[in-house]
Image (cartoon, rainbow, N blue to C red; front, side, top):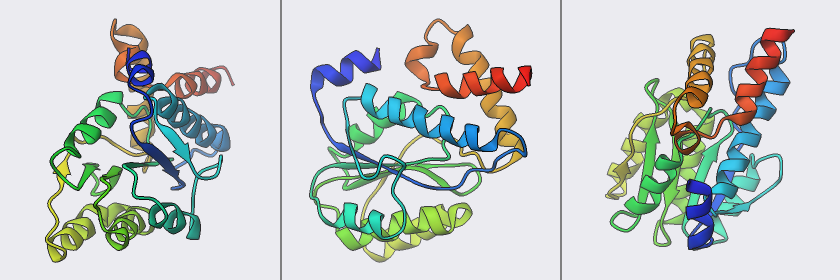
Amino acid sequence: MAKQEGKSRGARARAVIVQRAPWLPQSMGQALKTALFEDLRELVSAMGLSLNGPKEGASGAEIRALLETSRDTTLVLFSDIPGLPPLSVEGALDALHEYPCALGPCADGGIYLLAFGPDMPEKLKVALVEAATVSPSEAMNIAADLLTDEETNCSVLPPWFRMATERDLQFADNLARLSILSDEGEDDFVCDRLRVWFEQREEA
């Protein structure tokens, strides 16, 4: 399982969870936001990564400070991403052996993950994260322009999704259900708290 594998390798990189407001239903919205964030924290721990930044997630000037003060390999995760597969994290880390950065695209034009190697310029790191947070639906287009202007190669990961619309909520519900029906569900997704949220929502 990813948890055992990550711990056996030790802390290979640090992770920063950046606050990005998800689409929320009218009822139990704050509980959903917490569930998404706590699932990400569990994933970071399971993968043997070192979590940096505020416990509630980084925002504003905190992001810039975290990215500019370290030359470590850094994964940037966003707090509106449901059930991020450990394989996406593994793929990002593997890609950094060949590329200075890796990014995970969303179908709506957003970004679900950014990974930076030690040689990635600080200003470019900050610009990419700002694009993903300030203009999430245009993030991929902005990132492509930034990387082209800086002549920086980047690995692109398989697509995933973010909680941006009510339709994404339904997809997340199906994901949570499938994760317990599959024999390899625990290896593929980390969404225990998300699944509990859906169960509590049905009971309410």
